[in-house]
Image (cartoon, rainbow, N blue to C red):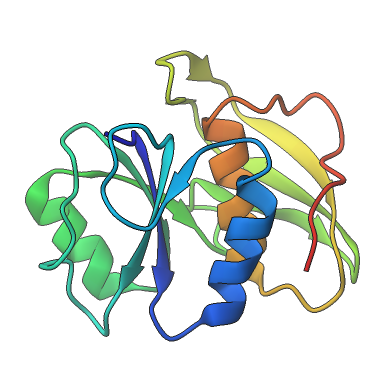
Length: 158
């Protein structure tokens, strides 16, 4: 079963397309629970996780603004990896312009292989118009799934 679950809004096809384009080149993805997929792209409804089959010990990347989903994840004991614009979030921006950003991992967390990742800054280059959560969540997925943060991530596509 996938160890990394990336939550996206069911109503946002642009977000889903961005995730698929930028993650499928390196990892096996699934829109359904799949034992062979490294990353499971799960779409949330308006405010419920009841239809999702979240595997135990999975890391769930979630928008920090979605308080209802965060509460539900806490209730089931899932490890939430928050992406947002607060210094309290696991992944946030330390700087951002129209086509460049520095994404910051704010605290030490394990990756999908169990290796502890220390706080770091990840420079990224991306096309204009990518929503903040999409960029943060995709960067988080890449870092957590094993792409090193030593170099600028330049391969984001819109």
